[in-house]
View 1 (tube, one colour):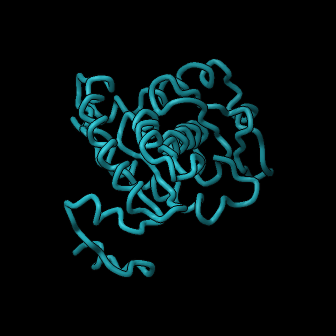
View 2 (tube, one colour):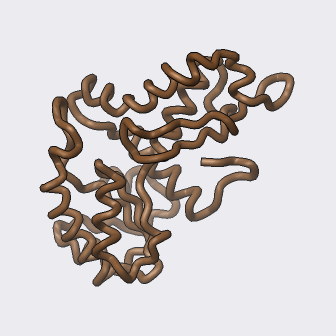
Length: 213
């Protein structure tokens, strides 16, 4: 009801179902948010046995019922591993069409830099996240820029603190998910949803000129 009440201009209708085959029928974009949640005190390996079963079932439904060019975004953690499971059981879906949500880490990194420099987050661009969506990821600012009153500058130049960029900044982004779990006793919700929207929008429509994610 709230989706309808929001009056989204591109929303044609809503089908609520517990039938995974019905949910996957002819879909062009699948956002996979279902998974066993990681709670405080748990490691991601603790949820794997349940998530393997969940993603095998969902992958089977996508393989049988989704559009041949279906684009898939895996949100549920451990996102990279869940995406790998899904890939193994959807042989007809192009490999390049199966992705996972590191856009959340990208957005977290942008915000850390904007707070450090006291600038609007939209003025910070081109941070790159390498690796897994986990505490082993590497937020890279070597190509990152910030727009200032005197023009566009490299983040590393404006921050002028390699010690912070190479330590606290990286650690904060790497451990942000755990910090949120400790604060709310659940994993990220609104920020993950917003990042998923960013991911799909740029995947379908393309990123703005000179913008990297």
